[in-house]
Length: 408
Image 1 (tube, rainbow, N blue to C red):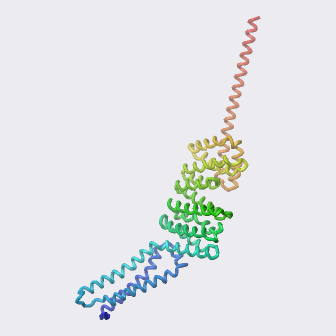
Image 2 (tube, rainbow, N blue to C red; image 1 turned 180 degrees about the horizontal axis):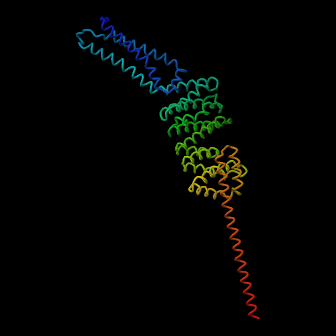
Image 3 (spheres, rainbow, N blue to C red; image 1 turned 90 degrees about the vertical axis):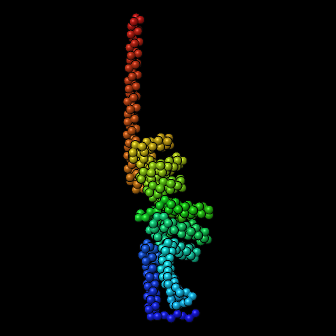
């Protein structure tokens, strides 16, 4: 086929169309990046310059594609297709508009996922090489999750981290203490102050941390670095879940911490402060079980139990009544109670839990006052009983003397 003859008018028209296409397409990356979050733009500029070159290659292909239209579909008279000029115009217009719009839609939807996957692969590659995590890339990945919106955006980052952590734990270079850079900040993805996750995000984060623990137990680990950080992260997630009233998540984490009194205290207190009394009571009941099972000389369980109990005691009449039932349950082991309360006060002051220590002091003083009043009433009752007994003895003695005189 010979190329069609181009008139001056059609040549100018095609040039204008191509210039418009180039301006439009080159402006797309700017538009896409401007509509993504700041941390995504930062990561793309920092790590993904190859993406820009790939886009430029795509632009060149589009231009060549349009030139093919110009070459083969330039409107000219044809006995076989009299409406060739109209068909060409529509085809070129559709190609110019649809290709960039489709590309933009795909990029807007998958850009975060591509960035997260890219960072995960880069971190994993470095770990396979020397057994270390890339600090900057790891922090950037966590930050991306922290600044993402709840729901799909956070799930994308959590899924990428789940995949990354799973591959690291299966690596020969994993020593049970390599995930520090991830675990130190992992909870921020869902507990961030500005953009906390939804309940599904919290559950997904807990799933990932539980999976890490299972993998650690599967290899009979002897180094506790990652396990300690996992439980610290779970504690922060549990406290935030309690604040957001995600009761199911809170109860799930309480079950995980069934043998960790400090975490139970912190999560239970967070739940209590926002009025989630069911979760708080569950944590308190678990602490009571631990305190009763722990030897008396190991007082940390008792200290955390009494600390949370003091908040129940001082909050309102209903919670105070519940606290009284707990005190009744532990009265045999926690005797004398004032000694245990004094130890708990010292412990919480040393831990800078001033509010808890103050409530413990108030509870102790009130209990001592109540017991003082009970003791006073008991002494008064004994005194009255003694007076009554003496009176009866006196009356009895007087009666005997009267009878003796009558007999005489």
